[in-house]
Length: 136
Image (tube, rainbow, N blue to C red; front, top):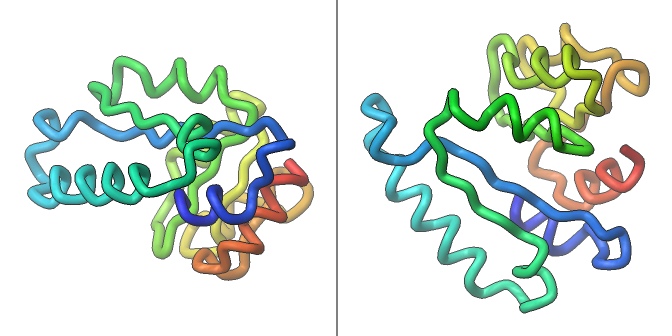
């Protein structure tokens, strides 16, 4: 998502990307959490300054801020490669927020493309992600 945002969402759109996830110390069942966080930080550090200024990373106690972030967001994005039932998608819909997500697993049963959200055919298509985000 970071790469797709950096390459395919123009500065002029005024969009910001918030990558929000759990504080690594609060996730006992994901031993790779700290490693993923470090990968994201390294990837963000090499972005051009103009892009870095529009990318924000939040490591939070999940329950404490999840609802507040979704209520403030202009678009909720869940670019999953595989997914059962998309709880994030359901929460965004309940909050009447536009949803941009992947056409995978149970999510494709939750979203009607162009009616209740936008479905990405290929979650690895970064240019397609950028174009879709601009239409939300």
